[in-house]
Image (cartoon, rainbow, N blue to C red; front, side, top):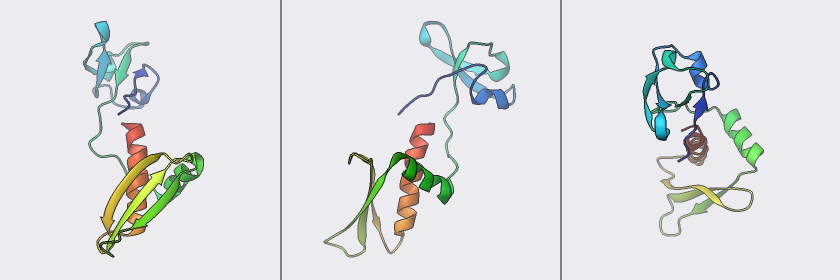
Length: 125
C-alpha cells in the first residue's frame, strides 16, 4: 500500500475544518495526531485512511481504462457454468486485479466496476 505524505499548506487539509485530525510527522519521522489548525507551513502530514471510498461513475472508470490502456479478460469456469473470473491487466500484461464470481449473483459489469474501483482505491489510500 502506498502512503501519500502531504506538505502543508498543499494537499487536502487546506479545505477541511481546522479541528480535523491528521497524522503530522514529528522528530525522527514519527507520526502523531494533530489538528489541521496546528499545522504550520512546511509540516508534513498524512490524511486518515477512509473506511469507505466513494464509488466512481462509469465515465470515470472508463477514463481509467483508456488513460492506462488497461485490458480485461473474462475466463469461464470449466467446472461450473455459473463461475467466471475477471482479470484486469496493464498494457504489458501484468495483473492488477483478479476476482472469481458467480454469474447468477454478480454481473460481468459489476465485476468490472468493482475491479476498477479497487484499483483507484489503492491509489487514494
